[in-house]
Amino acid sequence: MSDWTSGYVADINYTFGYYAELNPLRIDLAFINAGIRPPKVVNACELGFGQGMSINLHAAASGINWYGTDFNPNQAAFAREVAGVSQSGAQLFDDAFDQFCQRDDLPAFDFIGLHGIWSWISDENRAVVVDFVRRKLNVGGVLFISYNTQPGWAAMVPMRELLVEHSEVMSAPGVGTLARVEDAINFAEKLVELNPRFCQANPQVKGRIEKMRNYNKHYLAHEYFNRDWEPMGFSKMTHWLSSAKMDWTASARYADAIDSIQLSQDQRTLLESISDPMFTQTVRDFCENRQFRTDYWIKGGRRLSHLEKQEALDQLRVIMITPRDQIALKIEGLQGNFDLPESVYCPILNVLDNYQPITIAELRWQLKDDTAAATALTSAITILAAKNIIMPAQRDADIDAAQPATEKLNRWLLNRSRTSQDITFMASPVVAGGVEVALFHQLFLLSIMEGAKTPEDMANTAWGVLSAQNKCLIKNGQSLSGEQDNVAELIQHAERFSKQQLPIYTALKIIPA
Image (cartoon, rainbow, N blue to C red):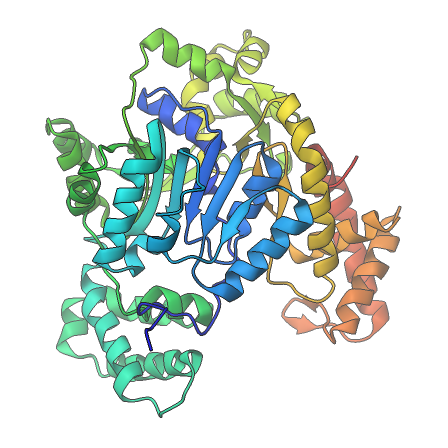
């Protein structure tokens, strides 16, 4: 009998994560900063969608036609259920890559995305993916691919092999994957405590093992215990994608493009002296000891002139998604924490704090009397986006078209929060994707959906859900006992929620106004 898993962990499901880098709306800012013309995305594909949260939130919240596959039938079944709820039209399959990539009912794509999965598949499947990109990605189309990379993983490679070998040879017959993960970590902890010479030469390994204790075991199983696992250097990735005619464009994480916070002046000088842009990325990974890359690649990129770059930036729309009084004028990078000048950022935030979408051109016009803010606006937009204070926003017509699907999906997600707290994102048609919504906020939104008008109403609904699950609140490290104390604490949470978060969730159209 053939092994349909191909060595991939399939007896337990992946986590219900959402990955914003898979949202095509994010491409524009990264590409404009890189001086490359962004594509118009009509058809998109996600390979290895896991539980399907990203693909479903993106399909519901935008007009893009989404296709995807995940060979785990349990995960594909859940993803299809979600797609059916939103009626987004997402076409989701449980095909293996070789089956999916040979389907004759797929369109050509403007965007193809893989989050993490590249690190966990065989070279045979990598070849299938590259051939799919070569055949099915349109000229001008974008590939998003994220993967474990060297040199940041170099010290952990032998420890990962030890973990896998322990799970294979030391676990009792018939023991499930989660138990084998737990046993392997226990053994690694015992070994590290003996301070072997390997750990003396690689002191960061001990910290990595300690952090693993805090990770979701389902995540650990997929991250460390697949048969195929390779942290890949950037140059090797370049070699893989060359046959598909792909050129690296930019990181999908905006903060990576802010050299001043990620690199020392001497490192920047060295990188500027390198004429080959691909080798620059390899050297940069050494400077940053990077463990994970999140990259956009393009098939036939077209450069923007200085004027075109400014015009493209001015057409972008953004929306602020963080309460004004919670914004710290600092940004953290590999080189430390950096203060952001009030003279630049306060005027910008003052314009944005009505939590409504605005184009950069409109923002620039409103800042015309603030010379410092207007002059630094381009870099400030990237920094605010990197801090997740602002997000790209769709056009009004696209927002209106997507709203029926997101309302259906969010109503289902809120009802689901009565019994499960494993999904912490909801769909916003404004940002064409997911927005994180904490558990308490989900319960308060649920109460509003059911007619709550006051913080007291919200607190009582939330307590009804929590008490039915035999849960209580924790305050100052102590569990609250009794309905009265729990409801009183929930009322305080609901009051803050009503003042700070509810206006933002309403502006994002997560729930109807």
